[in-house]
Image 1 (cartoon, one colour):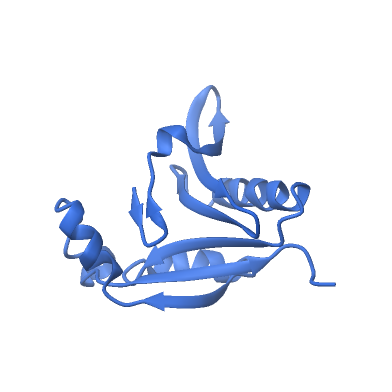
Image 2 (cartoon, rainbow, N blue to C red):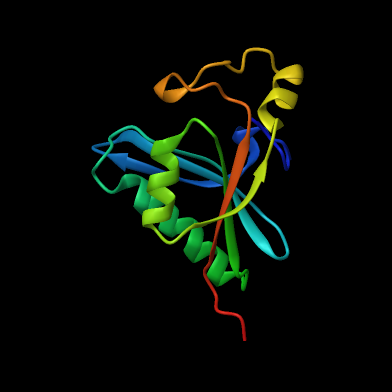
Length: 135
């Protein structure tokens, strides 16, 4: 997985897996840093059942337990559903990185040009949430 913060092998990241009747129904991976936890991937196979929210809460709890005040997540300009999902859960836009996907596509040409809702994919958007109040 390539995002503006780096290139990641999600098989080697920390994360949580959600199961239902012994079937995997969701997965979140993340990277812990000194001042933030960055979500690298969040996937729910059964939408509308709270799986994504539960996985997100797991990451937020991990941040709190490690005294890390902020959780960040990166999405792309076409992913309106992700923008809605995260904003409903208290995440705010922190940064737009123009052309980040275009740059990633040079390393990984299989990244599609057209994404959700037939929107061209070019930019990354970083959303964040303070999970521990500043003192």
